[in-house]
Length: 245
Ligand SMILES: C[S@@+](CC[C@H](N)C(=O)[O-])C[C@H]1O[C@@H](n2cnc3c(N)ncnc32)[C@H](O)[C@@H]1O
Image (cartoon, rainbow, N blue to C red; front, side, top):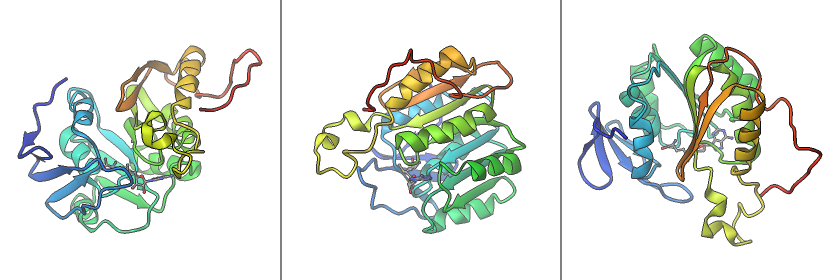
């Protein structure tokens, strides 16, 4: 994978486009806040190659779900240089550094606070208004809950252009040791890993999914050349039912 555009300053910080990105992949949320020149990105180093490998692709219209302190938003913007980039974020707490970045790029960048990834109407409105109805890249790093992640995917994947990419980060948390403890707040939450069965099923049925790449860090779902259709509109499980993981 191509990792050339990043200028590393130390083990956790790198520079891109005049901004410093500080990596802090802390469970439960990093305590580091972004400022105007140094943005906190809640990713581990091994996530970055998945994004730098997209540099040669056409990523003119990017939608991100879940911004936290805004580091990934600035990173995607500086790395892939889209014409338009928008994001939604459930929290209504302002992120001043990101607000400033967006106001400095107000002709092409937008952030929608207080917007949930399963708000289908809002998602459709945003894609219509900001992107004329079509996306090149979606990055879902929001709730990491199965149902919400699936709702976003069903809504947004048909709006990704043929050949475009849909990324779902951190799909594998439920297999990790911390989450085996019944005292963990997410113990009874269905795993987003369940989505992989839905994706395989849909790849067989709808024709909109070209391929699915599963890595420990994220899922990459490539849109086929089929120009339109729905995803996950039907199921074909031979009458079987099973418990969600
Ligand atoms: C893992 S953090 C995002 C990290 C950021 N993408 C980065 O790499 O620096 C997840 C974010 O998603 C937001 N979030 C959680 N549930 C959400 C939902 N249902 N819709 C939209 N955003 C959500 C959280 O408030 C949090 O800011």
